Image (cartoon, rainbow, N blue to C red; front, top):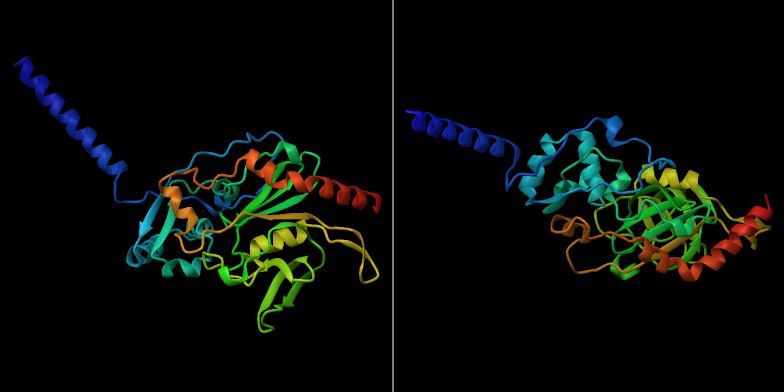
Length: 300
């Protein structure tokens, strides 16, 4: 009799365990954690007391336009904005995709979904610097080696690639016309290459490199960088006394292949940019950056 009772209890325990698993996991369904707007969009500031380690986030691919459209209809508005940002797109473009990448946790600060290190000690003496990564289509703003802001970008398409190397922010305008098409209004425009007419500004973010060499941003991000970066100091019309904030554009985009962030579903660290990689990228530019920074300080 005791054996029968123990057997019956074992079956009950097994069924209960299976039921829990079915409720919490599914090989074909993406789990999304719903968060409030305040949590999802808190200011992108890293304090001195922050633990400079990016939280671990898993990613899943949502495939087929029908599945994506159904997902969009039921998704929380604020979470949808974060998913769009991770896919380097405006929300309105998501329904056009046949594949999107979705994180398992949507409660984090935006900078935790992007590949730049939160702390770059070798930049400790650099007051401000901005990076644009071509292969990951993302940007990062640092102050004295601390990541203060990051997000997605849409850089130059294959026919009009964005030039790479060291640049500086120079002049800016709240709204201006595109040099490629004067019917295109560019909000929060900050020029970085005066002769080529290259700069960063707000414009449509379709989820891939689509610009005519400029660095597109969402309006929120463009406005932040517009206020954050410094203009050059000039005398007259062409005598540059000191450059503005340094901007480093680096890497190559894999045109013709799948979008790099889709690889996050197989390897959540697929896009990571290490401190060593960032240091090697900027090493050759540091002397010039520090020289311009010293000039700027003398003019204050």
